[in-house]
Image (tube, rainbow, N blue to C red; front, side):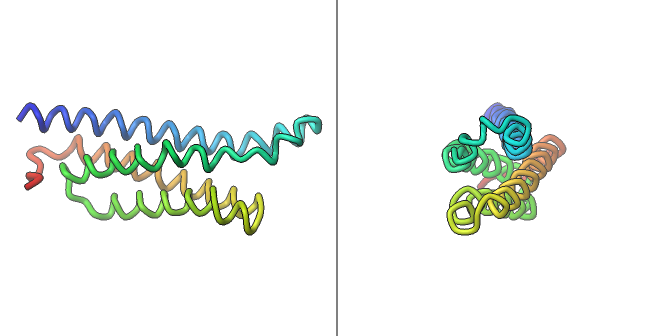
Length: 137
């Protein structure tokens, strides 16, 4: 039973980090245009693209957190929402940015970050409420 509890704690930690990273992504998406507008000399940094680098951290972390949570609560809707969020983030940070520009990039990335943060929240909540949980076997 100790293994189940430690997996629950790890899921809780990973979900919290996932929510934090999604929030940071939103702050980045909202703050950068405001900074560029307020300080024109920072406009050169608008071409810097942090989204692709963030995906390297966000996708594995979110996948791990959602997988651990699913082992406890078995709620496929939470996983589906998380996958949609990760897909939107990935599209926003790659294809949309390259092919359709900053507006498409921001729209997809912000939508994905919001959906992913919400799915992490539900994942964490479902894991805490799951007593006793279905077995992973």
